[in-house]
Amino acid sequence: MPSDTDIAAEIIRRQSAMEGERGTWEAHWQEIAERVLARQSGSFTGSPTSGEKRTEKQYDPTAALALDRFSAAMESMLTPRNGKWHRLRATDPNLNKAARVRRFFDEVTDILFRHRYSPRANFASQKHEEYISLGAFGTGALFTDRRLPGPNDHRGGLRYRAIHLAEIFFVENFQGVPDTAHRKFRLTARQATQQFRLDRLPEKILAKAKEKPEDQFEFIHCVLPRADLDPSKADHRGMPFASYYVCRDEQAVVGEGGFQTFPYSISRYVTAPGETYGRSPAMTVLPSIKVLNEQKKTALKMGHRLTDPIILGHDDGVLDTFSLKPGAMVPGGVNAQGQKLVHTLDMPNGQLNNLDKLMEMERAVINDAFLVTLFQILVDTPQMTATEVLERAREKGALLSPTMGRQQSEALGPMIERELDILSEMRALPAMPPELLEAAGEFSVEYDSPLSRSMRAEEASGFMRTLEFATAYANVSQDPSVFDHFDFDTALPEIADIQAVPARWMSDPDKVTAKRDGRAQQQQVQTLVDAAPAAAAMMKTMQASR
Image 1: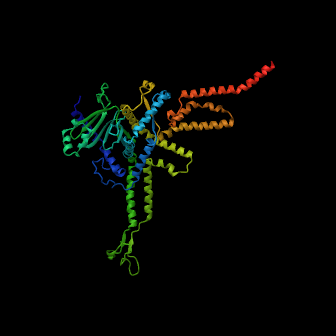
Image 2: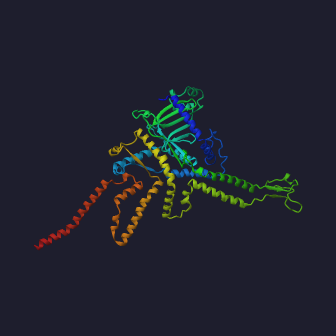
Image 3: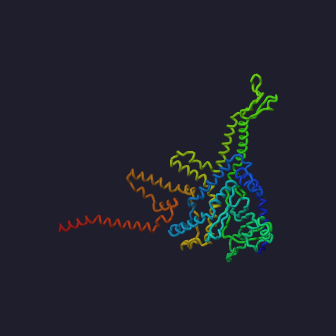
């Protein structure tokens, strides 16, 4: 078994190798940050000075504003704060027919959303930061961990943190899934004594904590698949993922643990062949962003020259006393015949108008890349009919589904698995129904975000359109047999499922059968009651005839 010294040396070696391999990426990210996300400029080239100006290379704000709208669009379509954007279901479709299985998963979903959107969890703000990183740099990372109990938080819960791309390094397994992550960060000596056990910290850090507690040290958090996994162990040695905290300055392991699930949810916008890190909308239109910046600089120069024109004067010394102040007298500005000896350099306004058109072309390209144009449909054409709105929404869903689908598989799926693992460890989940226990608790995630619902609604709307046609036919032909083609007992529960109706609002098959049996009995009784007078009259007639 390797010693702590060997582990620290190996982690530091791998960290140095990963830093060297992505040097080209960091130069690319820095160029984007300078023009699109100025607040993060300098993060990839060292430690930027706090409070310094970082917008020197940003002349036009179009890309920066488009990035903000991109992140808002991603949140509204994937993880809206005002609704439940996913549900849990059993992997076996037959189990989902059982009412208590559906209610179990509904309860688990409620618990999950309650913990996720707790004010102390900090999910919404951190997920938004991840979307911003995704749009600017093509890669986002979110760390999901258990929040420890505190004085006013006796049970603890979930805690989220968006990891800046300058800090996170990762590699993929043979299936292309990130399974090893290094997070490089700095702590002061005082912070290190708060986070780690004192007996694991090097003497130098302990001494600095007393003498200069604000001196900083560099640390690495390494999470990777455990090579010596022993399922029989109840501690971190029995967990699939190993966790090490290493002080890089002192080359020492200061913390060791493990995770049942990978705690870093790492997603990419798109990837190129042979590349691990993602490529972003900002990378796609970086040439347009640069051109627009140069065009804006030129437009500013031209506008400055129009409002503060260049003066052309006769070489006779008149400019020595020339003044541009309002109401000033300029002796010698004209000759004895009244002809001007001073003129302004002509600047045709048409050039500026043509430049404005070129700039609008580049802005349109940038907004298209950041998906802004898709979300301007209803604003630009408010007179659309309801049918046109529906068709536009479906078109938007079709265009967004590849992008959103990747985020569901790479970011949200692993995050939900991690959340359930933590809540299970906290014993915050209800007991499984027996039939689900027999299936080893296997579940799947069904996404109910606005995008997912708009895509799945096609089935429900198709059924309703067909039913409307059948109703019109039945009214004309007076033949109700056309409805025999519809299996309402199958269709209605599935339509309710598509429309995200909670299971507790729907009757299970046993209740439906009981309602129908009761209704049939009532009809039989009513039939007997209605037939009683006729039967009595018939009996009287028969008796009289005798």
